[in-house]
Image 1: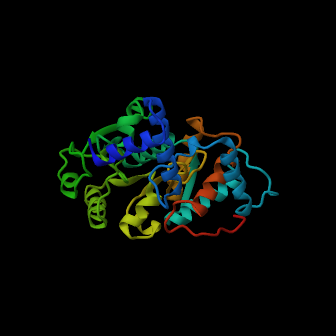
Image 2 (image 1 turned 180 degrees about the vertical axis):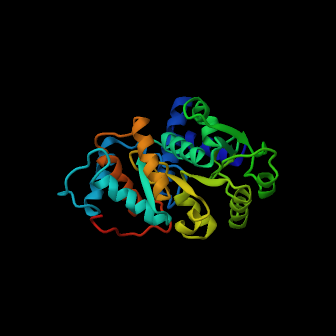
Image 3 (image 1 turned 90 degrees about the vertical axis):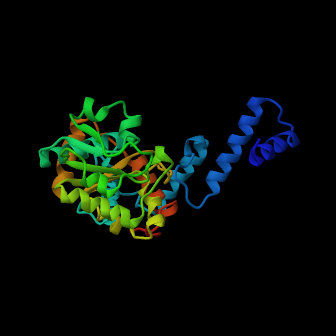
Length: 298
């Protein structure tokens, strides 16, 4: 038995927890408390909080946005404010809000496929779309995933450069979660982007946890995002938002992405709770490099 496991067992005995169920509940409570107190985390356990705490977090947004402004409707108002702030943070021309990351990335990559004339997406077999999205790339969006490497690590520039068939987009998940939240070095990431462009491919970052990755790279968010042609970010993985995602990139790409968002069923009537918690998360939670104070209007 490991020291950690033995210590946990001794603690369980000391607190009188004797059944497996009681021990599991105690350990879950400890993990939740540790996660909540951490300065940075790759995943927050907001779903374990009572509704009262979630509503209290939503109320924090009152200091960040004028609540007397008209509410949003089909992507206006506070949703537009969020989009502009994400685009500014990432140094991109524009950004579009999406209700889910699965939808956001499918739309971004099918837009690139139309532009490059190649629906092939080079990515890691442990990337989120390959493991957790039920083959949505191929089944829904007509994309063709290919694997740059089968090793449980980020691909190398040489593997991208020497891949034996053409691809239109190189997708890099930062960090690669299912390989253990692995990130390349700054030099490795720069070389990967350069290798893709040598092949006339575009680069897309799955940046669901890009906010936290900035600390690893030691670079501001816009400098990291500048290596990619488009970037997807999430608002709930670690920012405690109620959900939602965004794709940032060239204005022409984002304009087309909005059209496909509508076609995919992503034009939700009102999204102000999600947008407000995303703004509060960017301002108050684990976002290295994000400004601490936002203006109240777009």
